[in-house]
Image (cartoon, rainbow, N blue to C red; front, side):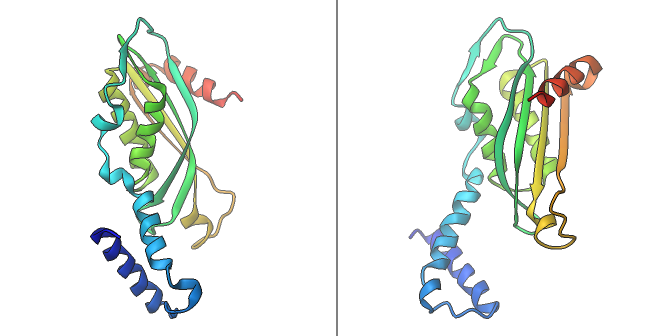
Length: 188
C-alpha cells in the first residue's frame, strides 16, 4: 500500500472502532484497506486536470449546429455527508470551428464528479470546462440525480430527483436555443 492508502486505511479503521466494531474480526480484517482504495477511486478526479483529460482531442469542424450528448452516467459523493449521488448528465454545445472528441465529454463529467461535490457546482464546472476547451458559442448542461443523503438518512425520500441546469452563451441568451436543447433531451 502507498503511504496515502495506509493513512486513509488507518482513518477508516479508527472510524470503525469508534462506531463499536472489532476491526480484528475476520470479516473486517481487510475492510479499512479496501475502503481506502475505494475512496481513492471514487475521488480520483482530484488527481486529474482538464488539459490531460481532454488530451488535445478538439478537432476542426464546419459544424455550427447543436451537438448533444445525453444520459452520461455519473457517480459522485456529496460534500456534506460523503454519501453517493447517482444520475445522468446531458451536455449540448454549439461549435465555432472546433468539436470535442465524444468520449472526452464523459471524461470531463467523470473528472468533476469524482470529487466531493454538490450537484449545483458540478453542473457549472462541467459547463465551464466544455466552454473552455471548445470555445463554443454556447453550452448547456443538465444533471438529474438521486442523492443517498436524502434517501438513506434525514427525510428518507426514496423518489426524490434533483435537476440542475447551467446555460452559457447562446443557451443563456436565446430562449429558442435553450428550448431546442431541453426538447432534445426530453425525447426518449
